[in-house]
Image (cartoon, rainbow, N blue to C red; front, side, top):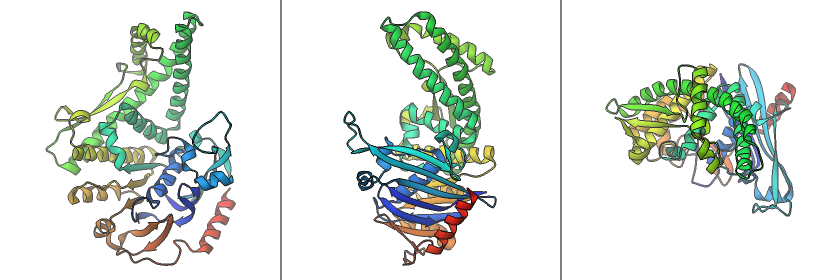
Length: 414
């Protein structure tokens, strides 16, 4: 059992100072658009995967005024697990921008991660606390480019197993080095024999990643089929098919043989366009209903339901592998959904220990949860607790003395 008990933000986007106490169960953040609801979930997910899910560059998460004044941006979370507290802090320190850089801002940022006061890398943070994010943008998992589906798989497997994350990082470095060598070969500044070493590295690391993804996809396909039937009914026959760029064999060794053959076949193409042509960075998976590829033929409603199906399967996979449910985050995930399907999704999501939901429509969720959820109004970067009818309590979400107690407990645990 694990849940986020406290979230403190400093200069994180439009949330300059915020301290929120949270409990297990369902918490609904509601209010108009552009008030900070999504930023709250962005911060929580950052504590899980060490990166923002909506920033192309991490400078974007630092409040502009704070960057100009040189103040730090912080995401500070306390996670309760089996009677122990884990404190995770992700900090962004603005640094002066050199004259050669033109990022539209007057600063860059340096990120620092600490877990119980000990410095950690992003790779070491992933897996400490798991999260699954449902968002309106998930429709791209169905109708968008393969890169989004690869990212879905990589985040899932990295949270489930640190060995996968380390293998993926090694593979990415190999691809980068090999691409650089291919460019040098085309320019006549390297010898053909230099490619042999990087081919061996690519085959070894890439075959293992492909195999791990294929194992995960088998489990995900079964879960997706079940969840989709429960959300949409048994009329649609869903299949999820992994499409690696290298033909899978019966084991990793056989897949390595196939990888080498595919690499040899792509040799001439790689010399013309000097990028690695085969490997996990070219993989994809398809969602098919009654044999039709939903990436091409899905209606918007079908695509949204399929995306929710993938997220439910992701949560189930993590709970099974880690023997601990993830924190479930639903960011405007219920829009454009009929009430029956919305209720089915909420019933499934609330099987987990902690669920954080954002919405502009309080009534939509209060009708379902009643007094069985906590409600927090978000407006202009500030938060106020309320009841299910939107009656706001003027007192803070967590009393100041609780802040101090949480601070002392976190420091003692470090």
